[in-house]
Length: 110
Length: 115
Image (cartoon, rainbow over all chains, first blue to last red; front, side):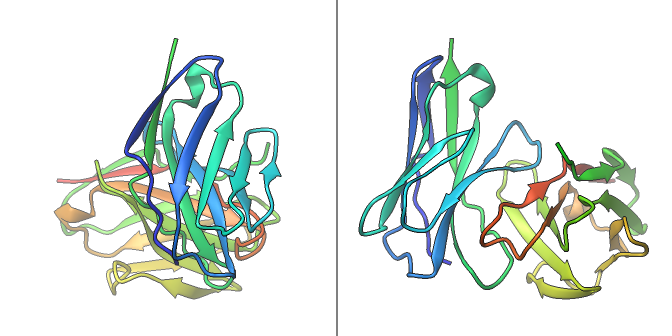
């Protein structure tokens, strides 16, 4: 699986959009980009994933650049409950393991 | 919303003892996983299980570890002879497919403390 690079921490004001970047410059054509988050030592929670098109669900939007070397997770209206570590993971379609990195600690401030 | 249930939430055991961590995956899921997270460290993959056999395992998953699906609902992780360094949060997860087109659903974890 391709290595991903994320900033270690970010802050966001409550009610504002949180934009979390991820670099995956060595991603291969059959690797999806997944985002999970972990709220204070709870189990990781799946957020969204995509291959090359932008994706949106009830939790977030995922913007993947045309060259697929980077992506951005967007939480459109961050709340205090969105404070968590966010993980960006590049995963092949074959194989089952998720390789978690250090992630980005997002702190949403009142 | 369907959940992955893990029991117990916290287990304390003496070094050298056997422990069994239990998980009830989501009922229509076919793939099952164990991950662990040592305090302050990354979440690490241990093993995946499909069709009653291990489909993938990491270097961490040595002979001290085993997994089993003893009936149609439970999925267990056994550590035969616990060491201090086995102290960690253990997360069970399940998915409908191998995961590339769906996310995994994780349980809330079992905190294992080896003393």
